[in-house]
Image (cartoon, rainbow, N blue to C red; front, top):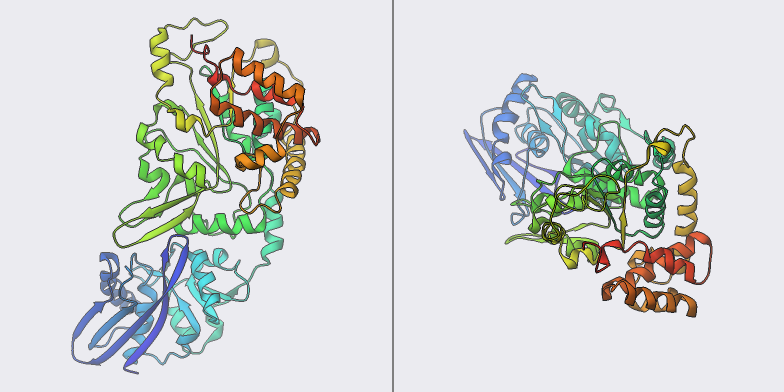
Length: 515
């Protein structure tokens, strides 16, 4: 069999492209690998030869030419080891392998023949099904992840010997991995969170603000002194968000699969992701990119929460690159030879101190910062970025009386029940508006249609705009938040008390807030 073809895949963005791996073997002693491979792919020769030798399948001396087509797509990583090895064994006739055209094969080889995990198993499995192939052979570590794709048989192997025996006709060499995707997803969703809002003492106004943010998908910033509980409450936000749908779980898992952070025992990500990058993060690590583009933190937070603690400490360039993804809910990465798009629909939750010392507006601890220092600290966050944050809530330390109280606070389950009901109202409202799923995504036209307040509410909003000298950008934000508050209450219209509560969530927009 001097010419053999196997199927592999290359991941671009969050999708996979088919790669044909052609292996030709003739008499001689020559090795050539072509098709735009990177260094990791070129180094496969040593890994493949050593792995086959240590497994009792030494490569015969032949002229071996390997072509990876299409040649204009960059082949990256070590996951091509296994299809190359299978192609070489078949082409040199070291073993008689059959049915190679029925399978997509991917896997990295260690020197003893063990198969190592790969990235992008889920999108590659989806590609295999689209190609109409019978099965997908890959490392066992990734088998659960790939097996969520129906109408495709997934074979998870421990080493290359099992793969060769399977392709030689011994179908018992690898047991197919089979799971009931919907049943397993439902079971994983039932797993309780380790944290709960019942553990939070006091801070009722902040918990209410987080409930409103979760109900409407609003971005939120909490500003207050150190130790007031900003991080603690932000980490509990996913516990009150609506549960992931199966479609959202697949989309989220695809992104994590491409990065290679899906565990061996995980099939689908059942809970909304919570990402909390350190403030030293680079702009590329946050939004994605690099020489070989990879998803960033904003894409890993897709359908979940991105928490930025100590917001003013992030580099200005890092914060500014988030402006476009916050608006478009996706990020486009363009390079000279490739352009990819990653989804980035996330809730931004930010926390910050009000000044360099952290105690501006503190009820008991004096602030040592000058008004100029406070203004300079706040100005690290640009107006256009703040414009994309609907809710701004000030947080103060909990008094000792509430901190020492033994009575538990309201649980996350109770809050979540109200949030889910409000989201269901919004889904019905926006069912005919493509790309709009919650109040935070409303356009100007939809605001005028669904969030116009009654006369009393409009007059109250007018007085607040004049009294607090609120900026123009605060107007639509207040209406969006007021619409969510009305949904939580089950009200068809936006009333005066909804507007009043929404105005209280625009602290930083008040002209006299920082003196």
